[in-house]
Length: 61
Image 1: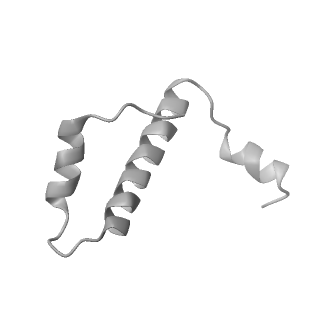
Image 2: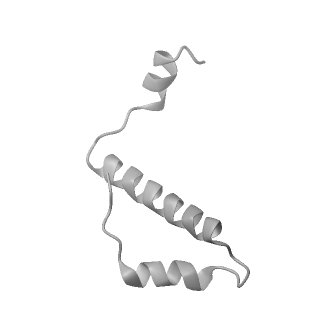
Image 3: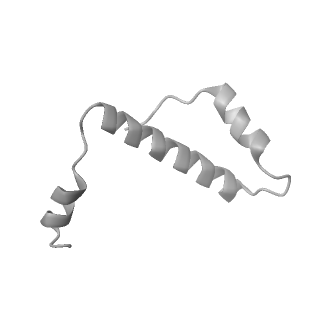
């Protein structure tokens, strides 16, 4: 799922980065931001699983 980018938020991300930041640093920040936003959207829409269910599925304690 892709979230629409807001230019103002993108500028804020760049402005918070150190002067010696690389393109890879910027891409990582964007990736993390998008991943968190998608996770929150999934949670709000009820598209998540309980930790106990996931642990049971994979045979974890």
